[in-house]
Amino acid sequence: MNKADVVAFYARLAEADPHPETELEFVNPYTLVVAVALSAQATDIGVNKATRALFREVDTPEKMVALGLDALKQHIRTIGLFNTKAKNVIALSQMLIDEFGGAVPNDRAALERLPGVGRKTANVVLNVAFGAETFAVDTHIFRVGNRTGLARGKTPLAVELKLDKATPQPFRLHAHHWLILHGRYICKARTPECWRCIVADLCAFKAKTPAPKPKAAVAAVHRPSS
View 1 (cartoon, rainbow, N blue to C red):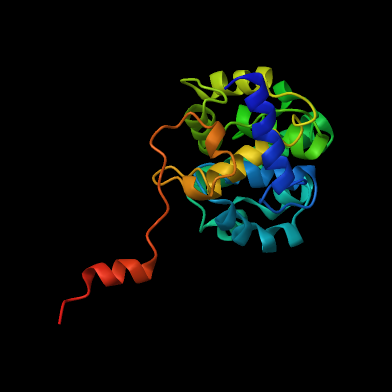
View 2 (cartoon, rainbow, N blue to C red):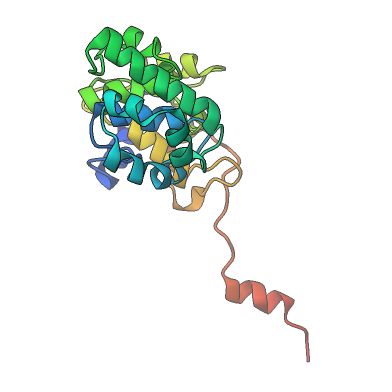
């Protein structure tokens, strides 16, 4: 995708959704870290259902440690891998207390030292909590980057670095939200909805999915003759 197409690509997404936000629910940077860590291999909807009651009760590392492992597991038991994730949340909360005075650091290296926090999670926290121009490459962004030709790469890091290089101002702050939402609702893994995609003409994906046939027309085709 050339520079002019990249600008047009982002401009259309921005016009359609000027102020995109994460779909994870949180109340402060700490609960954001917890929510993003819990969202690995899980849906935002599922995480939100599990954390609404939790975050009403617990919104600091100190409160999480006081809650304890067993009680935390009960809150998040509907989330995949909840046993491991609960242990990581308690451990990262204790580390925040011991090493950062209970505050979430505004630093990728420090964030990545937290149990259960990888580069993607760190990038989300830096972007959403601190306004950094980061690109958190999840499965949706990885797919959109490669499929459209916006940023092709064999690994999430390769796609992230290409996005960082290719994405111009004023789109850098919100770029990762636009791409995630586009991948989640339009550029889906199995059946991308190309027929209603506002950037389809800029996309390198050749096997464009046609619009589904109207139900009436399908019914007419299968209606037995009299």
